[in-house]
Length: 255
Figure 1 (cartoon, helix red, strand yellow):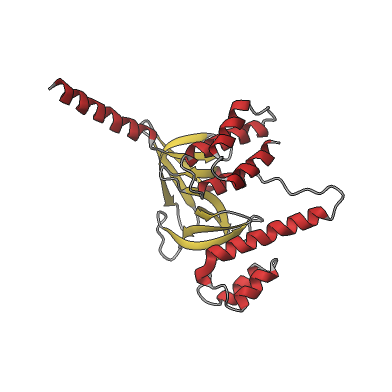
Figure 2 (tube, rainbow, N blue to C red; figure 1 turned 45 degrees about the horizontal axis):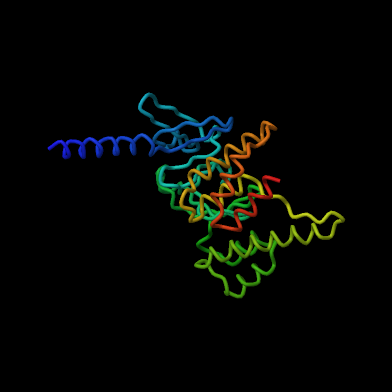
């Protein structure tokens, strides 16, 4: 009987611990962090807001106040510009050209992220077109003629978005590399911490939530011009050990 009571008690506290730790994380533009249940909602037709609800209080923020949201299921949300306004978007595939899911104004449901949107690192964006795909995509991706030619020849179609984005990003990377090799100091641009965070979030890394937090801690240290503790460096490189490409980028950041 005592064993049964003990088992029930352990199960109860295990469930309670899961409820406490399983929370969404919101990071503001001032780099403050808020934990709780994140809910998106509209404030009129042109404004998106977000509410973070914890046990003790509710915090409401405008889209312009938010830097990043990480849901407890691992989904990563950024604020990106679409048309004339900034919106919350869920990251699907990161890179110089990223694929996001945004909300569709026609559906008017702030919780429904169904509209595919392409966003360049420059901030330029385009809703993935249903009509005029070849023409609009060719214009949007004109920086890489090889990708455009494949789209024009129908070798790459709307169903090949992952390949289109990967090929485009490789093209941009090679352009950077070639431009760098033409100078006296041959350098490949150091990847940014934000780019690495996006790639970790989209990866199959088992402990990516913890790894993302380590990267954010390093970013805060760099922003304050503080030295990065050796334990943070070791923890990051160890966490990325199973993905050599990401580990290599982390090593460049830590140089």
